Amino acid sequence: MKKLLVTLSFVLGSYAYSCPKVLDHDFRVLDSSENINLCKYENKVVLAVNVASRCGFVYQYEALQDLYSEYKEDEFVILGFPSRDFMYQEYNDESKVKEFCSTEYGVTFPMFATTPVRGSAANSFYKTLTKISGQKPGWNFHKYLISKEGEVLSFDTSVEPDSEELKAQIAKLL
Image 1 (cartoon, rainbow, N blue to C red):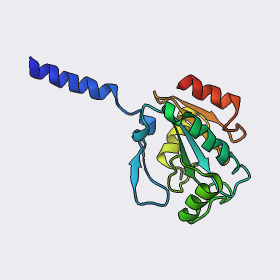
Image 2 (cartoon, helix red, strand yellow):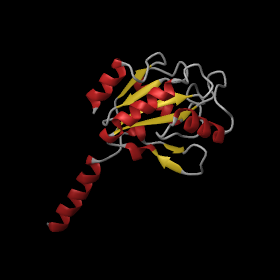
Image 3 (spheres, rainbow, N blue to C red):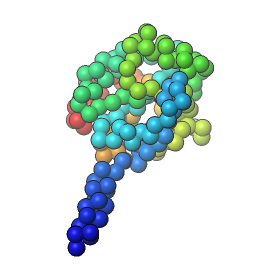
């Protein structure tokens, strides 16, 4: 009987803390050989953003960093995905992307290797985000807000990171 209870407890325990399928994807960290699974961010509200250093919306990095600084202690994280999908507005060299984000905008939120985010070449995470939300990224700085349960809300580029609309949704999910 005791062995059965321990086994049942283990099974129930692992079920209770399973990662939402939307996060179960592996990515290489920007300008690194380190790979991580996004399940590392389970039990957090996640804002996934496809970014580009030479885009007219690049100024959004500042508000993204401010948003991250404001909420990072409250189970919130921003994940940046540099992409060259929109007029090749991201550097080819990942070291330049990393340096630009760090020196120009003081980015400290997690950034991942340059990757496609739209169409048939999109990475598996972005294909999942598109499928769940029903919206594909229309341009750089498209935002997907993912709840702790794996629900996805989509915000196009025009929704600023410090907008009341986005901040209210983040606060609601936290």
